[in-house]
Image (cartoon, rainbow, N blue to C red):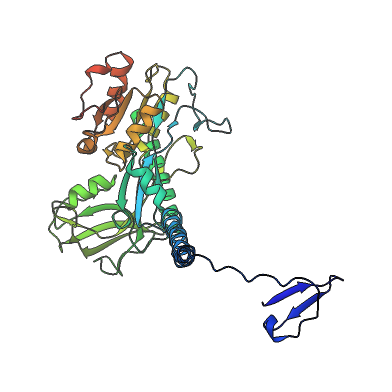
Length: 412
């Protein structure tokens, strides 16, 4: 027998070999009987258990490993997708968490009391640069009828960083607010001045080396045509759509306040007929009132139309809203055109969840509206700011049910 035995003084005694190899002390104790041999059946069972135990242990190890792998793919593996879900809505006639009006107008009498609700809508986006989507997110979105899962490359170019996305979103929001101010004040009879200046000139553009950043565009002409005053980006695009690519045009500009004429060839229009200048422009709008927007952590251009409606409501003694909550979305440009946006299905779902009865949708989004309208929400298309104003008038007169609709299949 190997191991340790204890003597009368409880001091350990170590045996290095078999007990039979050491002399035994003489004793009067009876000689113990030899141990009986165990039945063969019992020995076979014990041998079977000895063979089976390692397999059971292996199964536990395998199960634990599978659990760890599943946990990794559920919690820590980044999936290359973007998940869009309904985001919060904001009443542009209300106040933010700091009790400050979302739209603050100074320089004219305002009418902030007893207004209805005009809710701008948002989309909550998960995924893309700086934001990870895990397996639980994908599973949750798969079973959420109001969420959509898109490949990340369809939403964000690979070259974009999270900082780039934030910067672009802030810039788009600033531009939409500026356009909203201009359109709203023009609709109320205020004089608004807008100018367009050069922001960036790609090397492949015909204007490279001719125009400079900061140049202010005043007029454009082709050949012997009369110069066209550049008042909006839309008038410039419409004019260029009639000119073939690589045609020379002459621009009257202001450079550091000095008038100048420059001539260069246009580029092929990548989005339609005709040509384009191939440069990036910044707009500068001078409005006669001081208007501030107190909204944080929201980016993008899609609230422009609702901002413009909110400004008009604040400056109008006769209300344009009613006791019917209205939500909506849509970009707006200086001409008052309401443009398409992304995430229309999620925005409609968020609007209805926050109590909206009517929804103003860009007419260009009607195909995406079809089949995604929540029950209880009336969706009407608008193509211009005037369309939106007429829709609010109809709703105020309790005739909202007569508004035109996008094709729809109301969800049950």
